[in-house]
Amino acid sequence: PASRFGFRIFIMASLFDPITLGGGQIHLKHRVVLAPLTRMRADPATMAVQAMSIQYYKQRASDGGLLISEGTVISPEAVGGNTPPGIWTEDQVSAWRRVTDAVHEKGGYIFCQLWHQGRIGHPSYKEHPLIAASGGPWPSVAASAIAAPGKTMSIFPKGKGLNATPRALETAEIPRLVEDYRHAARCAKKAGFDGVEIHSAHGYLLDQFIRTGTNQRTDAYGGTPENRCRLSLEVASAVIEEMGPGRVAVRLSPSKSGSMLFYGSTDSDELDEGGLHVAYKHLITELGLLPLAYLLLTEPRWHQGKFDDDAAKDPGFNMPVTASADYRPVYAGTLAAAGGFTPATAAQAVREGTCDLVGFGRWFISNPDLPQRIREGAPLNQYNRKTFYSNDEEGYTDYPDMQGSVGVPGRYSVVSQNTLGVATAQSKL
Picture (cartoon, helix red, strand yellow):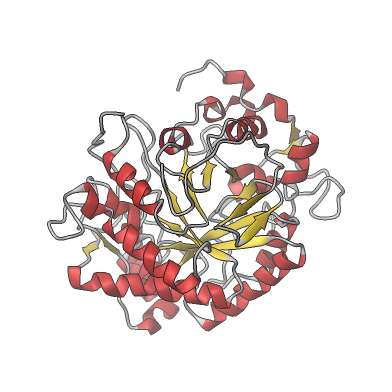
């Protein structure tokens, strides 16, 4: 397929071959990427990252390596959790600047993931002083007035119980929403980020527009696959105008019938003659005409942490790569994949040309020196899901590297890279 960067030429590569992103903007020395990971450790009052986050990202930075920040909310309206970091105020920009400086000191690159949680928010968040001071608009909004299943995460008195029915965004509000993304990109640039990744996946706002189960609009942003993808493309174009070519990425989570759903984001599964999702094929084709740094596709094979007590028994590590494999022929630019990879399957995906970069989440949480461990075949620290979303250094900055120079040596058990998923290679859920 043609793209801004021409036709794709297949060359067998390895995880530790260099690669240049965005037509020459960013030069990576390896392809092991820190995937964006919600950690919920921002300052509760300012939604600015705290000092421990400087250490967290610095530990995981490497010379010529790429880190993608946790989801970072673009505006007061975008908030859907209690302590996510933001990227719309001066305090937040200043705090992030200390993180980006620390990453750059080690020769690394870092992108900021721009996040609007849409219907996952709750009206009670306007009780937060920072959000209240903004004067609105408030959480929660969505493509259509359809509530997400399950309970709200809000800690405010009026936020208990089931998720609220969101307010459907008016057509006239869309330009303002696009400008919110542009403002967040401007703030990220000021904070020293090398680029931004637009979160258009996982059942959050932009994904809510893409999917028929959450989009029942009859205007230019609903109905046809082209209309449902319109907002994601408008946001991408606006952010590229702000950041420049080769400095913007997009994350998508195309799914298949029977695969996992994010926040109950169902879809009609419109497929073309080749079995590709019509809306995602259209969106990925159009994104291929933009000067992106990369496109990241999430593999639909995570099992809500059900098997995290024993990584050797997680069937997700044995499921085939589908999203990247399906859409690789459609997208000629740099393609990243994330979700359920082991070092071995990541190396295979890059070697076979299924993707160019691989994002690791859980294994990068527990192994700050993950690229080095993968290169050397060293054992991996086992991650502890109970501390993924807590609020202190435990499970955040205390995982040790191989030299014992960071973290607490001996605190966590280790697992051989060769055993990941082996115990259930033939199992079924």
